[in-house]
Image (cartoon, rainbow, N blue to C red; front, side, top):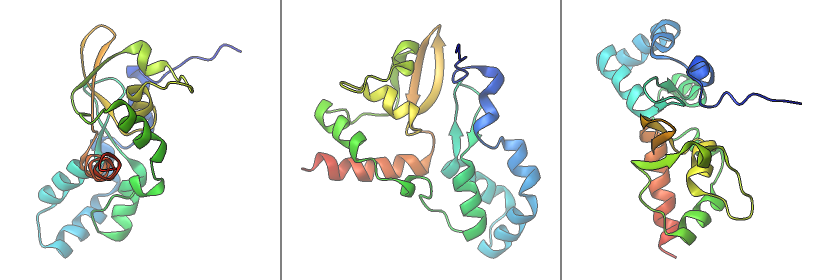
Length: 168
């Protein structure tokens, strides 16, 4: 009956994705093969993969890769918005448009807003964090966080959807 919320707990930060070490260890052969196909170095390819799919964090400094997007990238060999294409965030876009929330990088918030889920008047920061569109970038003060886009995949997709939503 008494559940423990481990969302913002350093002990469990890497539970939801691949760490840098795991990516380099488990996908070394595929990275080497894709780098040869793309005619770039393995370091360049790893840097691009990091830019596109790394960045999720629940504690600030440690970052993990989105496993769904990494697996799709490794299978296809193409940088694309894999995770974002699994669902259209119409409800989120409506919340953002109604509150005229368009600046989603470097968003300050407290820990209580990250935990809340008010279905009648949802806090856009909580919604975006809990659904993976924003992640913790920094925790400069106790229980105060800075949220931002986790990676290129999410940022590009969100900006495209917001352009459509805000142009109405």
